[in-house]
Length: 424
Image 1 (spheres, rainbow, N blue to C red):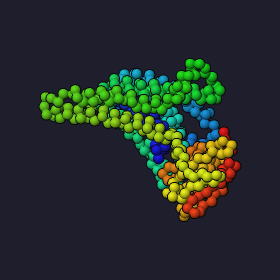
Image 2: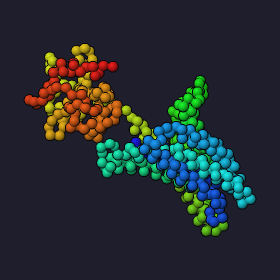
Image 3: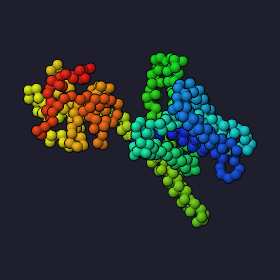
């Protein structure tokens, strides 16, 4: 669930923030007297979403096998649109003031915004939508609890991005226009940097561009800090949020009459609330995309080996040491000097699963226990406990042992014969 959440959230943030920002900067108020081109931004969002869905389906059906051919064109369009959107944002006040006198300029700005939103949405949602193909693992029921948790994480990630953008939008009436414009410009510049980094990376992978020296190091730096740029695109809205909170305290309560005083009180409450909730959204997204990503990418550590009796060429592990149904790890030094590990776990029904802490596929990466499941550290495959002790797949490599008289006994010669599995 967490993995789907932290993958969906950053993918949806760019389209959500871009759509919200252009809606605020190119908005001309309420009522019927608004340009018809205001709908183009919504059409751009829907077109980008539809294209991303279609592209994902074609990739899943292996009709499209080289996504780079499509993404090269899309990223070039994204970079061009980002540069034009920065220019539109800088002139947004002039474009929306008395727009009736120059409606074509506003229509052109909305067209650029719609195109930028469409391209950004299409590119950003490709990997997000591809998650849908991994909700149900091969052989699992499509109605399992694991599938439902993955779907919930995906939905929450999308919802978090949309809600955060909606909260930031409330700052349009409570913060000074200049503060919101400054945040929007920072956001657009960072979006341009991200798209340009992805474009150059793609051009290099296609061998169409070769970068050396400082240019290459800057590209690597930007690529390695893409998540930091995603978070920064949200944090820049702390500028209008702080301005909104300050306005909430500075706005005078007094007025010529009670009606005006009530209006001032309502504006103060709304300004403070908009600023505080925006800060809460920023903190929540920052925590989700730092602690959440760190947790998903955390490399599990193997538990330390336990002690056991070793007399002569017989290793003895008593039942009372391994009868709790959890994974137990042991270490042995073979006659050729190789340090080996083996594991034992009690199965349902009283039988024991015994094998090396290694497999034929993944080598000596080892296994760890998480929420009652035994998982291969290298490939993240969950091992059926009932199959431990049998050959095949990612199962621990089995070896002979004897269970009886209150203990498991192992001839060290059987371990010595398998030492090659722990030799690098």
